[in-house]
Length: 150
Ligand SMILES: CC(C)(COP(=O)(O)OP(=O)(O)OC[C@H]1O[C@@H](n2cnc3c(N)ncnc32)[C@H](O)[C@@H]1OP(=O)(O)O)[C@@H](O)C(=O)NCCC(=O)NCCS
View 1 (tube, rainbow, N blue to C red):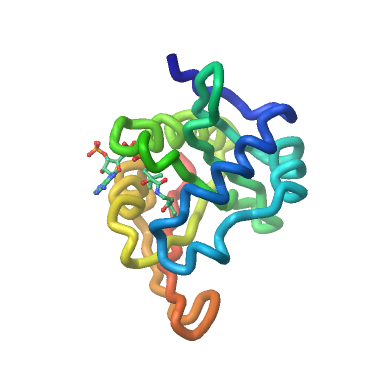
View 2 (cartoon, rainbow, N blue to C red):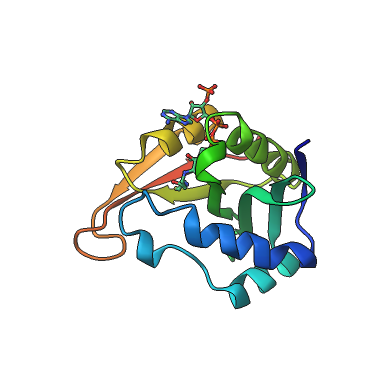
């Protein structure tokens, strides 16, 4: 059975471990994972939700508030062999339910070739799209997508 819940402190090492493997098929995968020390803070001080069974973390989503008042959806990832079964979508559902209670705008960035993520974001209302060339390095462009407060 898969549970969807706010991550607790005991989850941070498992989330960090999944963060190290979930991006291996993405471009520039070596630069994407956050460190365990960062996840320790994320779990305690930002909004992190996990999809988990009794034995493993299957996916996670993380958002933090910005000084602008908007929220940044910093990460979403699902274990490679568990994709396509609605886990990413469920994680967005519970995260956005919390952000809509505030309510607040939220934004994220995505590699323009990441079709699966782009479809997922569109489905969850990230409809404003800005192309930012060289967002990280000259050859690493991003879309910045925004979902306005409801
Ligand atoms: C993006 C990611 C989180 C999606 O998670 P998932 O659990 O597979 O997604 P879901 O099964 O909930 O699918 C949600 C929607 O995303 C889209 N989608 C998911 N996988 C897709 C694929 N391979 N191709 C096209 N669209 C896809 C669909 O629109 C789908 O909605 P639908 O089922 O109603 O058609 C997952 O592929 C992942 O972890 N990728 C690696 C990390 C990553 O790239 N994260 C985003 C970085 S910005």
